[in-house]
Length: 439
Image 1 (cartoon, rainbow, N blue to C red):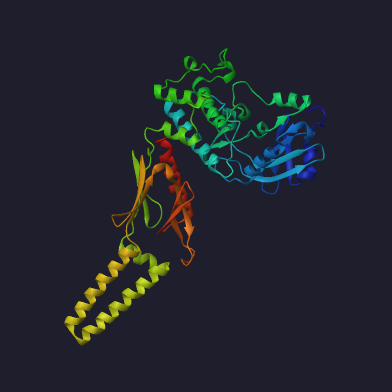
Image 2: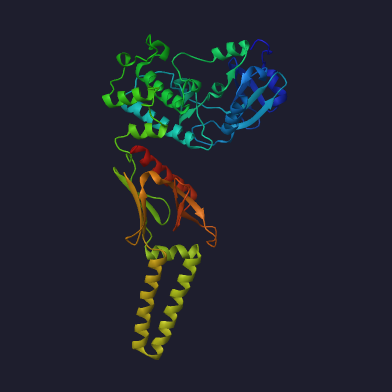
């Protein structure tokens, strides 16, 4: 911006004394610098957002909130933020010091097959789904091939479009604002729903990978992307239609990255097999639904209580041992009485265990869900009213989380199934994935 002094590498010496700032990679309202951390002995990247006079901009608070959300977010596809600070020495500046990302961006074009493009689209939609699921949601707002890096650990996203949250008030800010835009690529302020900017960017990235040309080179007179005749990759009609739907700016586009991911697959449960969620919980997926059930046998239940007691498990185990000991003692008095009493003990024990830790099953299909205990229906409802599942610790259970069903009206239904929060989070994603596939 015209009123700001040009930054030099020496500018960072006071702000970040342990860093050796090497060279500027990009200019403008959003500057990128390459740096080296002398303490950690590794490369870093510094992002500087230079707003000069804050009075020239609207929406600075949402802009700042989204940067702070990015700083707090941890995800394998994001560069980790080492430091974050604000400065008002030369106008309003925001500094992000992040780990360096090594690899080539998707802008480095090379011939690929449809399978390659689908694999990239699947991974990107999974990443976007995770980011949009955070609270608050984290949108990229600037998804394009140059901002997607291929690394040995998978794809990583860089250069988030925080600046698109801003809105220039004055002519000077308007001039700088126009410099950060590029024809054809998504800018969240141009969408009624900013989520669709990321979906559009996903489709636009696929166009580039198929054609090897920037979007500005395949834009028609009416602003529509005319790419199919320029594609250098033989694509199936289904995949072409999927790309076109990503690029559709109307309500016919995908409503979320999750829905885009599901549509990319032959079936919502493609690639998912029966999977253990916890020591007593397993999930069976089918094209038309999923079943969540307890899977622990009685011996498995006894073994688990040996190392990690619950109140019910401890009492039942003591009851079992005590009654067996009593039965053996009675054998000394009378063999027939002892055998009869011991048999009664076993029957009583297994009946109690069956009632306390019976087989619970949650069956979800395309229209409804049903919860059964030992084959008897406990609760049912329509699919739309099931919001998801979560782990919740009940009073008096030694801080062991239990599975809880959440309904959209805020009501919850507690079960006695022991679970761990990370596993329930995976199960919840499966439930949402299935619900999205039948909308």
